[in-house]
Length: 476
Image (cartoon, rainbow, N blue to C red; front, side, top):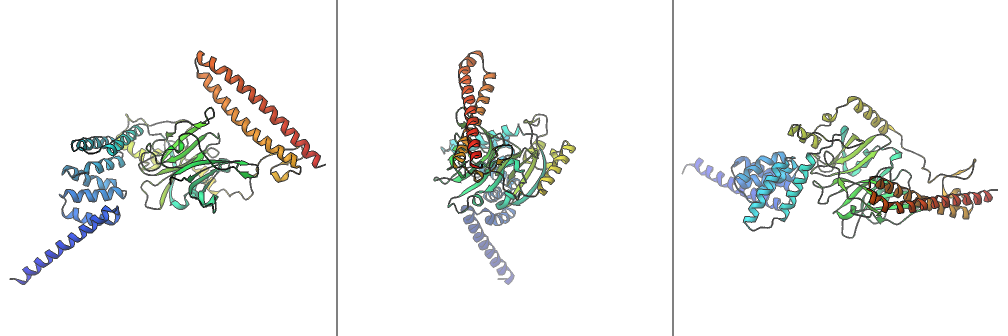
């Protein structure tokens, strides 16, 4: 037999054996979810046999799971054409990640139909179908926002990139703020007055929930879970509260998110001591990736949020925008679909620059904020006027123990007074929108609350006078 012919046979057998070994290894990695490691082998196999449905499926899933939905798409479409099982499931996910939500809906519906024919469970597919329908509704209401800057930073130190004013409070990582606590958490927000904390902390069920603490004289209260439905999702993290004290932004990865963490907003309801039903802030802030730490710096007129969309492992993109006074949305019906998707994805922030003067002014505010020197002096705990010559800022300023205790009572009364005032404001607002029958029912409650507010105001004033007089006597 010809020596060259024998050698070609041997090389062919060796090639087949090597390919089989590579395929087996790649499939083992694939089954373990190690898609990045398996992807190169499947890419070679698809190139060698482009008509193989299984190779297209496996390579497409690897691309999808490693953040390349556009590359995954044609291979998953090929797998579906060849009726490879589960192909529709992953193809619908690729459409969803590419914001082709109508295609995702059609594919999920076809997949669910096939599952029913085979008498398989459709629960997971139906949940994903509803999510794609929700995403389509969001795409039809993309907020028109002007983004002035974006920059990529290390995720572990991403809060350092937030250059917000002292008037907007402070942000910390949990481990930095609660040193040696023995617990795990996400981020911490401290109000501008330094008298309240909002933070996320790991719970016994291994999920993150948001808690708050109040400053009581010279110490903090114990943490208490925020009331209402904020913590009903799987994980709740990254809290931030506006200066009104009742509007809270946070991120959650619950069933109402597009994918991963989404940003939500809600307001505290003083009537029920709970928060209103949280609302997803929608696109372009949220995406099928992780989006979080939404902050509005009202003093500088700048907004911030973080996203790991299109970013490698360990990196996150910080977006800076001009907050709207009221929500404005793009005209979905009157805009090219590719253009709408590009705006929803934040493909290019320059596409949002419709007012160059506003952009330049906001960028100048951002530069000023970034170059501002950090405060070196500790902020005052409070401000309490004793007389025309003396104002106290810390509890240690008091010489009289009785005056110090009375100030503590005054501080508690002041907090209660503010809460009742806010509750009264909400009731009056509700009263103005009510019909005659509802107003008749509400009027008694409003009159009663007004009386309580007046009584509390008088008690506050009397307590403050007593504290001042005792302190003056102690300093004579």
